[in-house]
Length: 291
Length: 253
Ligand SMILES: Nc1ncnc2c1ncn2[C@@H]1O[C@H](COP(=O)(O)OP(=O)(O)OP(=O)(O)O)[C@@H](O)[C@H]1O
Ligand SMILES: [Mg+2]
Image (cartoon, rainbow over all chains, first blue to last red; front, side):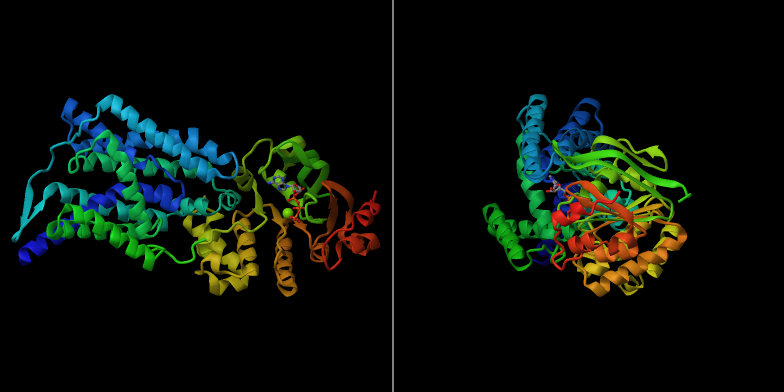
C-alpha cells in the first residue's frame, strides 16, 4: 500500500519532468517574449522524428541526437523569427493577431512536411528502458533521465534570465522594445536569439520525449495546448512556476489514472487546472498586476 | 558659440506613411548647449525626436551627429554612438527593478563599470536611492521619469534627447527634475528637450525653438522667447493649448 503510494509519487514527479521539458521552450517564447507560437508542439514532434531518423539510419543514441537536433531547431527558429515573425510584428499594430495566424500556418507547414517525410504512423525510439531499483521502488531510467535534464534546463534558463545581462535584455525587450532600443540594445537580435533558443529547447525536448511517448506527425497540436496550459499555470515566464505546475500535472495524472482510470485522469487534470486559474489567475508563481 | 557641433538637422522632413509631420527643419546644437523644442499637442515635437533617433525614416534632408550622417542607423546604434533618449511615455520595463533598468542602459560595459554608473545615477537622482530594488511599474510618475532619464544617461551620452519629461508631474516635481538635469550640464552634456510645458523648458534651456504644425515658427535665446508676449500668450496659458494666430505672428527672424 505504502509502496504503491511512493511508486506513484515518484512516477508522478518524473512525468512532471517530462511535461516541463516540453513546455520550457514555450515559456521563453510566449511566457517571456509574448510571442504566441502555435507551432511549438510541431517543433517538438519534428525534433523527435529527426532523432528517430538519426537513430534508425545511423543508430545514433538520443543523447547524441539531443544537441544535434537542438542545433537544427535553433537554426529553424532563427529563420522563422527573422524571415517571418520579425517582419509581421514590424508591420504595425495587431501584430499579435498576425503572429498567431502566422504560427498557426507554420504549425500546418511543419506537421505536413513531417507527414511527407515520416508518414502518419507512431514512431518511438527504444532507449533507457531499464529501471533503477531504489528500495522497493523501481524508477524507470528513461523517465529519470528526462526529468533530470528538464530540471537542469529549468535552472539554467532561470539563472540566465535573471542573473545575466543578456537574460535581462530579453525581459527588457519583451516589456518595451522602444525602451530597450533606447538603452542601446539590439532588439531584433535579442528577439531572434530568444525565439531560436526556445525552438532549440522544443527540438531537444522532442529528441528525448520520443523515447517515452510515441510521436505521430499530428501529435503536435496536443503538445502545444499542454505547453500553453502549463506555463499559464506556472505564471508566464516563470521557470520555477512552470516546474511546479508540471509536477502538479504529473502527480495528478499518475494518481487519478491509478485510482480512477485514464478517462477520469484527463478530466481531473483540467478540473485541477481550472481550480488553480480561478483561485490564482496569475498562475502558481506569477506576479500579480503584470502590465 | 565656438564649440564643436554635436547635432545638425539639414532640411529634414519626416512623418508617418505618406504624410510628412515635420517639414524642412534646420537646426544645430553645439556641445554643451541646451535646446528646448516647445509646441502644442500634435505640433510635431515627438516626430522630430523620433526622426533624430531613427524611429521613423526621413523623407527629405539629413541628420548629422558629430558631423557624421546618421543615415539609416537603427535606434540602438544611435544610442551606442552617444545619443541618450528618454522617449515619450517613458517606456520603462514595468517588471524590472530600478537597478536592473539602469544597468541595461550600459549593457556593453563591464559589471564593475555598470555598478559604478548606477551609483552615479543614484547620486544625480537621490530619490531613487531607497527605491533601487523597487519594480519600475510601482514607481510614481516623477520617479519613473528619473529612471527613464537615468537609463539614457547610463551610456554616458554626449547628447541627451528628452521627450516631454514633465508630462503628468506636479510643478514641484518638475522643478526638482530640471534641477537634477541642470546639475548634469557642468560636465558639458548637450541636451535637447521637447516640452508642451513651455515655462519649465524655457527656464532650463539656453536656446529654444517654437514648433507649430511641423514647422519652426520662432527661434532664439530661451530667455528672450520667454519674454515675448505673443509666445507667452500662446504657450503659457493654463490649458497648454496654443493659439495658432498668436504663435504664427510671433515669427522671429
Ligand atoms: N504613430 C503615428 N502615426 C501617424 N501619425 C502620427 C503618429 N504619431 C503622431 N502622428 C501625427 O503627427 C503629428 C505630430 O505628432 P507628434 O506626436 O510629433 O506631436 P507632439 O508635438 O509630440 O504632440 P504632443 O505634445 O501631444 O506629444 C500629429 O498630427 C499626429 O497626429
Ligand atoms: Mg509628443
